[in-house]
Image: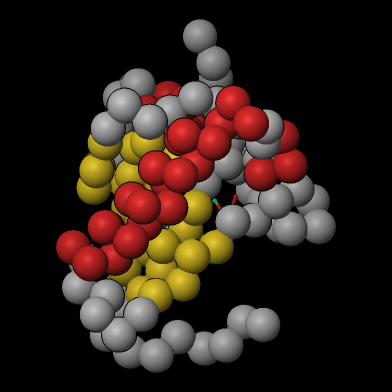
Amino acid sequence: MSECIFCRIVRGEIPSKKVFEDEHVFAFHDINPVAPVHVLIVPKVHVDSMAQLTAEHEAAMGRLMVTAARIAREQGCTDGFRTIVNTGRVGLQEVYHLHLHVVGGPHPLPPML
Ligand code: 5GP
Ligand code: ZN
């Protein structure tokens, strides 16, 4: 069994505040939120990072993006939100199981780029 922390969250071995789950993706609140809404969405299949994606991941990654929109709606991000994927050392990735951050809330977020 994988020791990857997000694989363990997907399997329920580590507790998380689950937001959504289907056959392709699992979404949960970030343990250290940077905004009122901060949800992480991961593919259930382990992929280290966006750099490792191949055609076999297309269905899961499509579901990941559609799920981001759905969660943003359900979390009340009516005026917009940010989606972030950190990749590799230069991308400041900390957890090496690909994940999409959905960050939003009632107040404007400071510019990042
Ligand atoms: P990265 O820099 O890799 O894109 O971000 C990893 C994110 O995962 C961070 O925002 C961090 O707070 C979150 N995180 C790390 N470990 C856990 C955990 O065990 N549970 C939850 N819910 N979030 C985690
Ligand atoms: Zn994993």
